Length: 187
Image 1 (cartoon, rainbow, N blue to C red):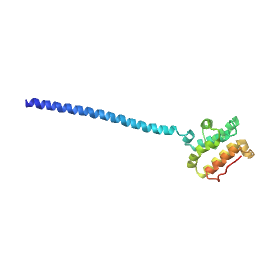
Image 2 (cartoon, rainbow, N blue to C red):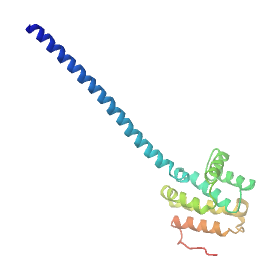
Image 3 (tube, one colour):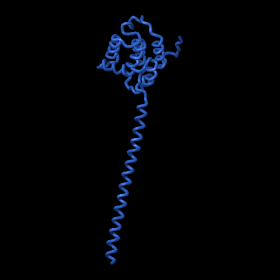
Image 4 (cartoon, rainbow, N blue to C red):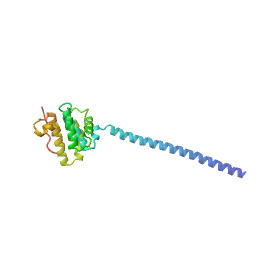
């Protein structure tokens, strides 16, 4: 009889351990499910944060930001003409050293497609440009943006006057880069 009791107690101990192990496995599955849920929450949070950021603020390459700013300041006079697009492609190739200037101009035009004035584009891009560019590069950016506002053929003569909006954007660019004091244009 005591042998039978020993066998039954051993079997009950094994059954108890198997059931507990099963509970342990189930608990680990739930824990891993919760961990993946937390991981998903974190991923969703950062995705929403990035998706909520303005597309212009996501531009990391300073050359791309300058080209977008040049497109915006040229658009202040109206829709871009074929001559202005050719000017942008020229600057993209020879001043910004792009291998594929046409594609970069298309990308820059796409970046500023919804903006009606260059000041809004400058507001979004100036923080990144200020952080990433040295003083000499900033002076070159100011020169490029002013040249874009005047146009390539007219920039050499320096006879083309900037519109009030373009002049204000150039002045704000200089102010944000620490080149001049801020002024306001009232008219």
